[in-house]
Image (spheres, rainbow, N blue to C red):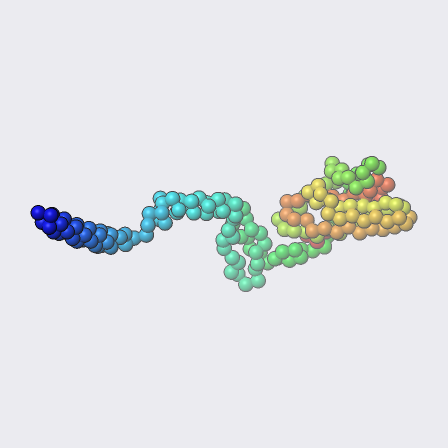
Length: 200
C-alpha cells in the first residue's frame, strides 16, 4: 500500500510539472502574438508622454517668434521683423542702408541736480526714433570746467563724458533702436549744444 501511494504522488508531481510548463509556454506564445505592432499609447496623441511634450512645445512657441519669409528680389534685404514673424524687405538693409546724415532741430534736456549730476531728467527735449530702423546719433557739447554730459536711451544712461578743463568740448554717440526714446543733457554744472547729427 505504501509503495502504491508513493507511485501515485510521483505521477501526480510529474503531471503538475508538465502542466505548469505547458501553461508557461502558452503564456509566452499568447504574449508574442498579441504584442502591439503600433507605437505605445504614451508616445502618441493623448498619451501622457506626448501630452507633456506638446505642452512644452506650446510654451516655447508662445515665448519665441519664428521668422517666416525672406527677401527674394535682387538688391533687397530684411529691413524689419514684424510682430507676427513675417519680414519687411527694402533696399536699405540695417543701420546706414538707405540712410543719410541729417542735422534735425534738437535741444539738450535739463541738467541734472547738483546732488546727482548725471540723473536722468526726462521731460522736454526727449525724442523718439519713429523711422522703423536703428539710427545713429552723434552729439557735440561745449561745457565749462569740471562738467560733462550724458546720453540716454529709453531713460537709461548709455554714455557720458567728463572734463576738468574750462571751455572744453565733449562727444556723445549712441545707436537708437526703432521706437526707443533718446535725449542728451549736460551735467549739473551746465553746458551747451555745439552740434547734433543723426544718421537716419
